[in-house]
Image: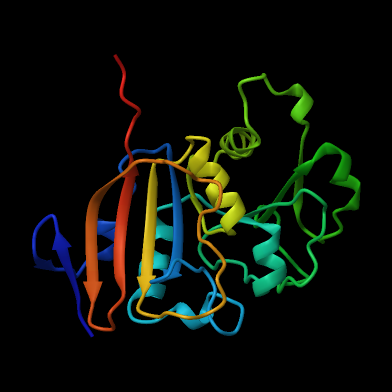
Length: 231
C-alpha cells in the first residue's frame, strides 16, 4: 500500500511524522474522518467503518505531534473511546455523563483530564481522572466556551492540541476561531447514517495546504482557516 502527496507537489510520502509535524508549539488541530457525503459515522454508528488505508497511521502521526487529544463526551459514549497510548486524553462534558467509556480502571495520574462546568465537578466519578471545573461566569464577555477549554489545557501545559471530535465540539472550536488547522480524511463511502462532521461552523473560509491520497481511495487534506479580510 502506498501514500502519495498530490498537492502542493506530487511525491511519495515515507515520513508521516515529518508531514504532520506541528508548525508552531501552540497549535490547535481538528483531526477527523468523514464519508464523501460528510458523515462522521459509518453503518455501525461509529467512525470505525470509515477507517481504511493509511488513516490509522495518519492519526498516529497527528497524535505524536500533539501534547493532548481532546474529545467530547458524546464520542466517549458512542464509540467507547480508548485511551490513546502515546498522549493524555482530555474529555469535555457539559453534564458529567461519561458512561460507555473503555477507560482502564487503574489510570495513571496525568493520563485523563475531564473539563466540565464547575457545578458538575462532584458528579465525575472516574478513578485517576483529573477534573477541571470551568466556570463560564469567570470568563470575559469575549470568551467562548471553546476558548475556555483551550485556555484550561494551556494552563495544564498542553499547547499542541488535536481535537478528534465529536462533531459539535469540533464545529464549535472551528466556528469560534481557535483552530489553526483542520486535518480531514475522506473515506470513499456513501450512504451511511448522516451525522454532519462540523455542525455550526458556517461560512468558515479554508485554504488547502496539503493533500495526500492512498491506494485505498482515502484522501487526507490539511486545511488552514483564512483570516477575515480587513480594510
